[in-house]
Length: 294
Image 1 (cartoon, rainbow, N blue to C red):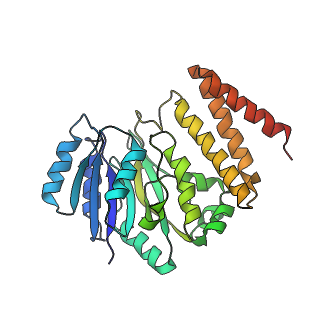
Image 2: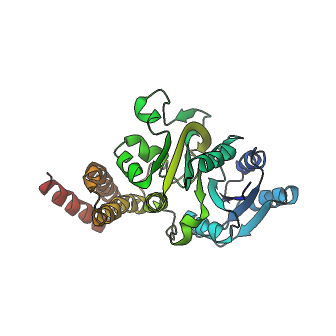
Image 3: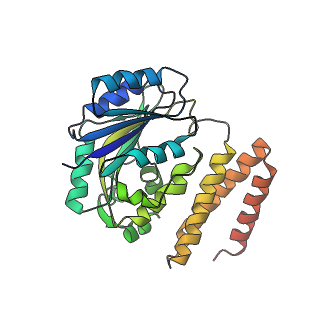
């Protein structure tokens, strides 16, 4: 079997890192290269990385100055020697068979990207699932599609919940030849994921839940205080897609409602945090989009 490089982001996740690494080591698919990339942890994450490196010769520890998720993912891809790569956040876990499942999907469908359903766990230990296999809209996503067919599926709300995160997917490494994550941690998934799907020839998906996402109360995702950089980049990601899709001859009208939603979030967040230029930029685009709506 081919080698798969697992790129683990380990920044300040000492309380959860052992569970994450155990779930990787215990995978039924064993031909793994496990890259633990740390960009300046101030807790015991590095010590735990070294502990596991001594226990498993598939593990490499890479230390870098604090730079954020985007540069860490880029670094991991640049040193990976596998045919495929998978990103995992160091506070998340995998079901023991999911890498095998995704690899077999790729081989069966001759695909470039394999995705699975994920679920999340919160600080209270409650689990939440993002897709219902009994919901026809969700179950219809299962299977293999071309990049063009995937674009048509973007009209489905569940797409944004399942496909846009970097983690929990198996990518053919060659997809990253001309694609990098931005040099920050703010909306980097939204700015990059769609480029990988457009570049891929085939994408395959299973409704099998194989990735557990830990939503911590102190994370960027769950923080109650608006992060204007995240809000700005989420809106920018939609704008980039609209421009690119238009040039490809793909009607981007299905993105209008989503763009307006993200622009309104940018406006509201900018108002709360005193970022006048972001507020004005969002209001201008909302006004024009509403003026010329069909």
